[in-house]
Image 1 (tube, rainbow, N blue to C red):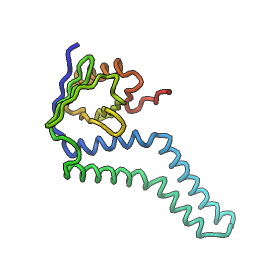
Image 2: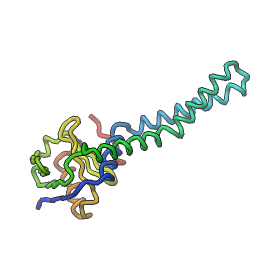
Image 3: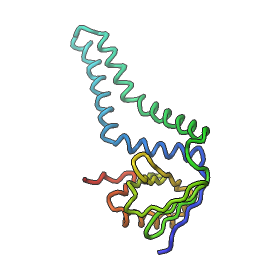
Image 4: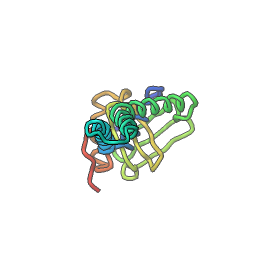
Amino acid sequence: MEPVTVRFAATADDAVRMRRAQTKLALPRAYRSAAELFGVLFLLLAAAVPVFRLPNRWAAAVAAVCGVFLLFLWQPLLRAAVRRGAQADFAAGRFGPPAQTVRFSPDEVEFAAEGYEGRVPYGMLYFAYEDRSVLLLYLGIGECRAVPLRAMAPEERRRVESLLKDRMKQKFMQEGAREWTK
């Protein structure tokens, strides 16, 4: 199998997509569902106070505010904060090298950028994650390289996906796939 070479220049949108993917990994669906469940419970508590003529109407108001926040506001606010932080990091030059080359060979992944070159065997990669717009390759805890999927042709994307599935097994996760068991 011949290697797949991906050359790209990172953009502000790539920085946002990378941070969104990292946020998805940090907040699994179970946590988001739990927040929504607590939002519903807070709203039910707020509705129960006047219905059952319970004292402490101020507590019902606080519960209503918490419920509305958890149900409708925290996820959009989180997305806005992630987007703003990623754009600020990109503008300040903290996102990483602007132009990169990533080569997926049968035995290793090669990274090349201004002032940086590295080869990492698939077995030594900490983790890999793919969503609709970006492929994240974790070299270790806190060390992440992002490859925008827009830089790959559909055939190249299938070959890279096949390589990662074959070489990394359970350490490769795709958006929408179930989490592996440890």
